[in-house]
Length: 111
Image (cartoon, rainbow, N blue to C red; front, side, top):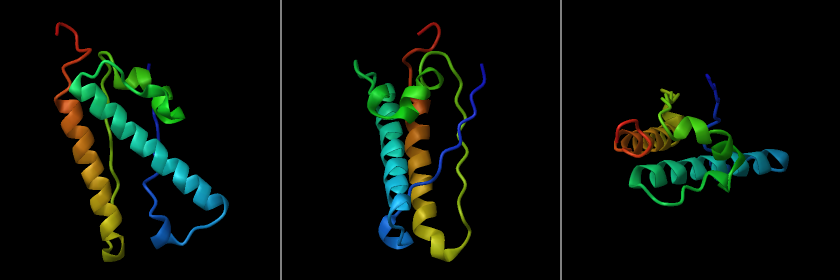
């Protein structure tokens, strides 16, 4: 199986000035990304409970994030100075995920 999942970046509501439906969407995106971080951290630490069901995103990605699956993540950042904070935030998230996935010994064949 091959799953391709496109994730929107986190949204700083105060900086973007969004409101209404866009604000609801931004909050949902942020919640999903936070849940993804929680799942990755739980997998890396070998926790007995992994909160896959905390968001639709992590529930759908459960098979891709556990077991012997291979996962690849691309992070797009902006070279513009006005997007510096967003780029740094995205890179920190990627570093956190990469560190957790690299240290994950759970679910790997032969371990």
